[in-house]
Image (cartoon, rainbow, N blue to C red; front, side, top):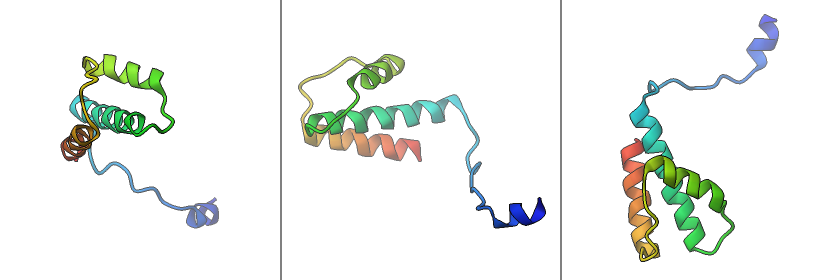
Length: 81
C-alpha cells in the first residue's frame, strides 16, 4: 500500500477554509462567467444560469453589454480570491 501511495499524485487542497462567503463568491464568479459565455453566443446551460441567479438573488438585466459582463467577471474573480 505504501508503494502505491508513493506513486499517486498528491492533491494540494485546503489552502482556504470553506465558508459561506467563499461559496457565494465562487457562485457569483460561475454565474458571471456563464452570462459572458451566453452573451458571446457560445453554448451555455441556461437552466444552470437561472439556478445560480436565483441562489444569488439577482434579477436578469438584458441591458448589460459584453464589456459590462467582462467587468463583472473580473470583479467576481477578485472577490473570489
